[in-house]
Amino acid sequence: MNNKRLVTLVTIFILLFSLAGCSGQPAGNEAQQEQNQDKGQSAKTSLVYNLGPQPRTIDPATCDEVYGFTVIDNVFEGLARYDKKGNPEPGMAESWETSGDGLTWTFHLRDAKWSDGKPVTAKDFEYSWKRALAPDTASPYAYQLYYIKNAKAYNEGKADASEVGVKAIDDKTLQVTLESPTLYFLTIVSLPISYPVREDIIKEHPEDWTNNPQTYIGNGPFKMTEWVNNDSFTFVKNENYWDAQNVKLENLTFTLMTDENTALSAFKSGEVDYIDIVPPLEIPNLRDEGLLNTVLTMNTTMIEFNTTKKPLDDPRVRKALSLAIDRKTIVENITKGGEKAAGGLVAYGFPDAEQGKDFREVGGDYYPVDRADVETAKKLLAEAGYPDGKGFPKLTYIFNDRSTNKEIAQALQQMWKQNLGIDVELKTEEWQVFVQDVISGNYEMTRMGWQAEYVDPIAMLELFTTGSPNNDPRWSNKEYDELIKTAKTSTDQRARMEALHKAEDIIMEEMPIAPIFYSVKQNVVKPGLKDYIVLPNNGVVLFRNAYWEN
Image 1 (cartoon, rainbow, N blue to C red):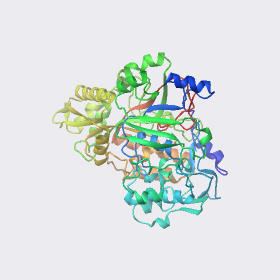
Image 2: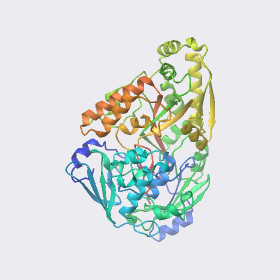
Image 3: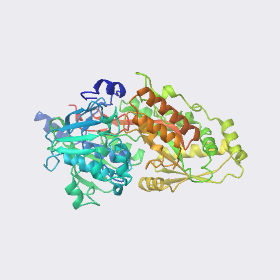
Image 4: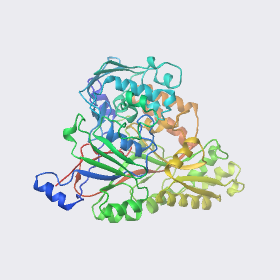
């Protein structure tokens, strides 16, 4: 990372990813294109991207889904931002340094403005971070700021905001004091939870500031001009962005289509330039046409078991349900997009202690990924008191409304019936209802996809610590919590990775989640689109430098 003291060590620590850009073809009004070409201008300066479901929130402090993050990451910017290769580079901060003990980071802000022309100051960051940590905000990702001194105590109501280790020294200088040296802290200040928001606007419009383009003021490359509920977002280039000279798109639209076939039809008709939800049956044709670009992301699609519900409070039942799944059949016959059958919680792509080694490869698979282990699954279910499924209650598996999710659910239902002799009811829910049911614990089994927010295995493993807002299974294990704590506070990379491998051993033994596959991002883009960025950790698409090639 670009840090005066930690650059070498952190560069080794962070795995470098080449982010996807692919070529494409301009679409739109031909007469206008010809007119622009006659003027020597780019033929197309607008882009329509299908986001998918409407986000539940686009507040950087409370968002917890990739759809919302995609909006946020194109409207806001943190102290650091991701470059084309996926590494943090200067964003709102043009430089920074650390103290000799690694506990104090000092960030020096550049001359930057909000989209309404007001200057971005260090005070904006101090306010925003403390707002995200405030107990009343109920931020699901507040824990990502726990590296800061007294941040956890404040979030838990055990300390005052004034005790949190973030302070604006002056308008251009932000000083951050950490609980312990954190090698990857620069990745934390690149996350949405650390983006600045406007105190004056939020105080005047505390409940609905994100709903109105007039109050949704950002400091990033684009600014929102319209939001049509359940239809689309519209953005224009933010002329006040510090790097506006490198923002080539003048207009950006996010449509909100959730059905893969509908989105593909819109793409083929020219209404949409870029989609990343694709009907599995169409993948071979799109690949042959040169329109498909596949990116393996650090995203694990899994089943979450509500461990507070009987009989799912018994790890033998959870393991039986997991081992009865034929993951190879799902990725080869249903998803068909290059997904990898998952043999553990942490996906491929995360660095291990030894340079060049991958955490997943070092950890290996915890069960067969090329078949169901029916014998062991049946034995475990019998030990739990349900031989051949006798007496097993009917459970309900919920999932959000996408056709692929339905096909996977039906395959799981059949596998559990055939391999364990149990009946499972399927229930489809609209996205926002689905997410609320999962968050509130109103489910027994559910489909969920989790992506890493930064390139370290702890980004996945810390989700399931006791009390984590993202611990949907409501699972708790003290040894697991201690191992995650060790990995967070140690500056010895080998000790960190050893602790994280042991933590994964525990969660895969108790199985509050059943990984199914490691996801991919299927990008279908019209030829000619260049320099868009797909973040490999979470699949968010950045259009900061995107442009259409003539």
